[in-house]
Length: 265
Length: 277
Image 1: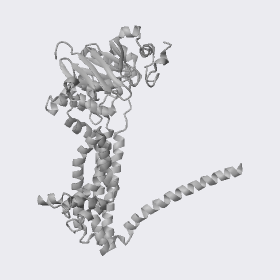
Image 2: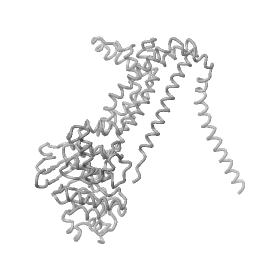
Image 3: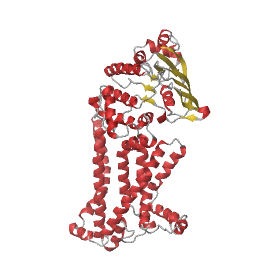
Image 4: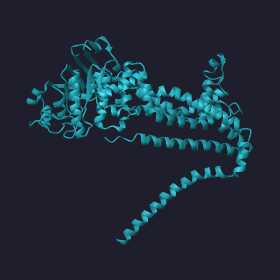
């Protein structure tokens, strides 16, 4: 690992059906929260960074590696980008046990080569996260919080260079949410990797991120430090998000936010 | 008031009579032939039928060819379905429809098509013959006919199975660094396996029962191309109880397969019960 934390630099354009996704992001050691109304293209932006949707144009740099440069015809496949991706439902393989899920990530990296050593190393990862006792459970036998932590352990076992989280607490109940949030905050801080967090939940933003990008209809409507955005919300959506006790866009609002709707703010 | 009540009960009764009458008639019609197949002539004549010279060569040939057919269909159909299920190419949808064609055309038409393609005077028959190989009216022809008519059953199940896979799981697998072969063999295949097995079972049943295309393209030569369904057809001209005995063999097999699949699907539901979190 290099001493300086890598830097993730993203500039992409893609057609998303209803609108164009056109976004530029810079992520360093400070975690970035990506917020915006439903259907504003947040998850699509993560998928674009992962290389899972077709880009019209784009340039993605991770540290000194070029992941995408459409002008030069470079587009590294997803499996070579070294990006940890945690989808909303955590994406644990249901046919593998917890330890096998982690061992899968190790096998992808090619090291260690022996099955037995991989398993031992996967156990070490689980132990590090206090999950050793769950090693032989299948994902169906685990709580939401446990699944989230195993998914993170698995993602880190693949030695990623950046972390992409898609609504990490959305599918959890309230108690698990608090626990997972604390766990994620601690993990993200100690890793120091570029981290992008898509969320609807102001509590996630407050706990996990220090910078915020507001995405609306595929465009970056605002970006800045969490403190500044909170104090002077640059868009009606941001105003709603930071004044609302409820996660915006889940129960409170459905569908893309209509600007006129919030003119009284 | 009372009149309306009465008319309501009579209409309700009428409804019951009509529904039970229609459903029951179809049920009887579907069940009675099996009853006849099972009891007509009694066990002695059935046992005598099984002893007929046609039985065992046909049985061996049917099992051998149908198993080879299923193997070939699974071997080629799995990669094809994986590709079709993930292709964003519009022609892939048309190809899927085309692949279902053998289900809806009469098998005899399939046999003619095979003959026109691979028969001695067929489109590619000349090329094959120059290579010293003429598949028509041989063991290979039996397998070809079975693959042709039964592949769609596997294809449909496999395309659906792969199409229904959670895309997030595949995305996560790739983000973890899984190469395409690892993603296929260690994620997609194990997750789709139950449906693939179901599709393979239906394919096997269809291959085992194949008649029309086999008759046209492979002929009806005892010990060489005469499978059980063809043997039944031949036996009918000799003695109906021999035909009956051979039919019972096929029914027993099909019934066992259905029971197995049901049990298998039940296990599947239990193991896939969502977790309580």
